[in-house]
Amino acid sequence: MSQQRGRDQSYIVKTFRNPNAAQFYEHDDRSSRGTRHRQANFKARGKFLRGRGRFQPSLDDDAEMGGRRPYVQFGEERRRGMRGRGRPRGPHRGGRGGAGPPYNSHRPPNAALGSWFKVIIRYGQTYGKEFVVNSLNENLSEPFLPIGYTKESNQKDVHFFVENKMMADALLALDQRIQTPNGFKMRIITKRSEPPMLTVDDGVKTELQQALSNRYTPANRTLNLGQFHADPYIRGKGLYLPLSRQNVVSAVIDIIVANIPEVMGINLSKNKLTSLVPFKPLKNSCADLKALDLSHNLMGTVGLLDSLSGMPLVELNLDGNKLCDGFTEKADYISAVRKRFPKIVLLDNVELPPPIEFDVEDDSVAAKKLPESKSSFFCGSQPRDIALMFLKQYFDVFDADKRDALMDAYHERCRFSLSVSLPPRNSSDRLHTWMSDSRNLQRTARERQAALLRSGKLEVLGALARLPKTQHDSNSFTVDVPVANERLMQISVCGVLKEREERHTPVRAFSRVFVIVPHGQGFCVINEMLVVTPATTEQIKAAFKPSAPTPSPGAATGVGAPAAAAPITDDVRRRMAEQLTAVSGMNVAWSVKCLEENAYNYERAVQVFAQLKQENKVPPEAFLPA
Image 1: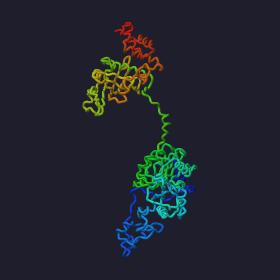
Image 2: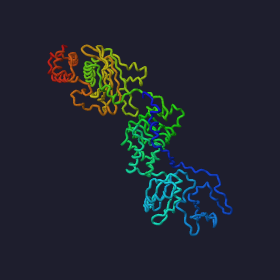
Image 3: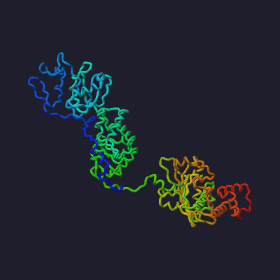
Image 4: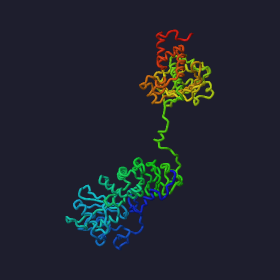
C-alpha cells in the first residue's frame, strides 16, 4: 500500500463510533459453567435471640421481596427444637393446618444479581400469553420483556427467561397474588438457569435480517454487530441471540452473504467470542471486507486468527482480548498479526508503518505472461533435426543384442561416466545390474572415482557392453538441445527404459547427456554422462503405452523424425543423405533417391532400405565400392 490510511479515514473509527448510530451498552451478565464461586461470609448471620435457640435473619441474607422470610421446613424446625413462639411467622408457617413449602424454596441464598432465571407459570397455557404478560406488568414497578416465551413439555405450563435477579424476585413476589380468569391464583416459580437456547427457525431469521438491516450503514458499507445480544429490536421480539452461539452466527453469515456481500467493515466487539471458525465463510464471500473490530471478546491465543488468515484486512482491532497479553514485545505482536494479515496498517486503533510488499501482479495476469511450457527445447530447427536423427540411430543400436556397431559412434578420445541413484531403503529395487560401473560421487570413494571415469573408445564400449540389455520407450523422451554450433552440439535426453533380461523387466528412469562433434560425414560422441534412477509410480504407469495417433513414435513429444509440416532445407536434406549413407553403406545418389521416394521421412527411408536389403532387391551399384 503506497500510503497510510489516516485515523479520520478509518472504517472502524468513522463507522463504529458514528454518533448517529445506535449504541448498545447494556450490561451482559451471561455466565458459563464453572465460573460461579460462592464467597465466604464471616459475619454473624444474625443476633442470637435469647431462649430461642436460633439466629434472627440479618441483612446479609438474601431476603425475599414482599416481606417474606426464608422458609424453614416444618420437619427441620421440630428437630431443631423450634416450638410455639419460636416458629417463623408468615403465610407459610408450619404446624397443624399450615401450608406446605412453596415451590421456590429450592433457590440458593446470595444469588448473583446478573444471573439468568427461568420463570414458570403454572397452567399458563390456559390463561394465554397476552393475559400472563399484561397481568405481570400491571403489578410490577418496571415493565419487563419475557425472553423465549414457550410452553413446557406438559403442555399446561409456560416458561420464559429473565436476565436479572431483581426482576426474578419481583416476579416471584407475585406468586398467588394475581387472580386468573378461572378464579385461581396464578402460581409463579423461578429457578436459576443457563442462558436460553433458542431455535433459529425461519421466523427468527426474518427478525435477524431486520436487525442487521437496522445496523447496516450503506453510505460507508459497514455493519455494526457490537454487543449484538443486547440489540433492542431483538430483545423487543422476546429473543436472545448472542453471536457466541454457532446457530446464530451461521444465520447471520448467511444473511450477510446473501444481502450485503459488498460490506467493507464489520464490528464484532463485545460479543464474548471464543473462536473465529464460524466466520470463515467471510473469507471467500466478502472480498471487499477491509476492516474488522474484534475488541473486548474472549479470544485467548493469536492462533485463533488463523481461521481468517489471508483476508485483505487493512484495519483490525483486538484490544481487550487475552491474546494481546501473550506478547511482551510490541514488535512480536505486530509481526504475529501481519503474518496472518500482511496488509494491516491500523492495529488496535494505532497506525503502523506501511508493510513491505513486492509489486506482484495478480496470478491470472502473471500466468498469461509466462512463456508456454514445452516438453523439449531446441535452439534451432537444424540442430533439432540432427539431434533427433542421431538419437534414433543411437538407441536402435544400443537396444540391439550386440552393441559393437556403436564403435563408429564414439570419438577416439571420448569419455563416459555412469551414476546410479540408490532407491529408498524400503524398496526392493536395488539396481544391482548397474552398480559395477557406477561413479556416484556421493557413494564412491575418492580414490575410485578417477578409475570409474572411462576414457577412450575401447574403455567406453567395454563399459557400455557390460550394461544390461535394454529397450527404451521413445514416447517418454524429453529432448533438449541448449547449445549447437559448427564445433559441437549438446543433446540431453530423459525418459524410461526396461531391462530385457531381468525376470520382471523392471522399468528405470534415465538421463543421458551427449556432447557430439562433427566427424567425417556425420557426428560422433566425445563426452557422455548417463544417470539411472528408479522410476516413479507415474512413470511406470505411463511407460510403453501406445502413443497418440501419429505415425512417428516421438511425434507426440517432439522426438523422432521431423514433422511433415516442418520445412526441410537443402542443408537438412544433404545431412540426412550423408547420415543415411553412413548407416546403409549406399552412395549419396542412392541415399538421396531413397529419401525422395519416402518424402524425406528419414525413419521410413531406413525401414524401407532394411526391408529391400533383406529381400536382396537393392542393386549392387547402389553401394559404395569396397
